Length: 102
Ligand SMILES: [Zn+2]
Image (cartoon, rainbow, N blue to C red):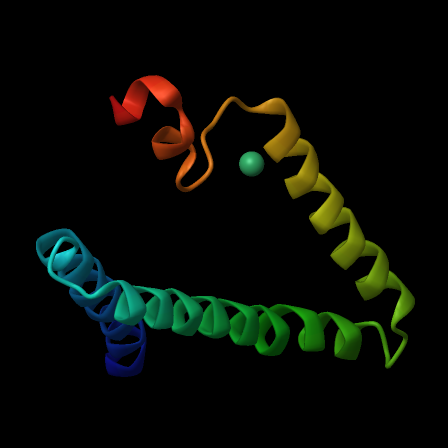
């Protein structure tokens, strides 16, 4: 039971701490450090998805890669479709508009 509580609280505290840094220091973090932290976060997310989702799905399929590969590609296609269908702005899009800079 303690392991479950620690397993829930540790990621929760890490996420809260990370988001608190971004929320309270976003104007004070140097641009280069911000890019480095974004790269670090993306590396953590890619590693987590590979080791926690992709590799277990391959192992569950008995070393066959095809079901996992189909699901992997379907997930990419799904996110591309969502990106295409939902209205949103990309990072830096507002500063590229002529009316936003004047
Ligand atoms: Zn987009």
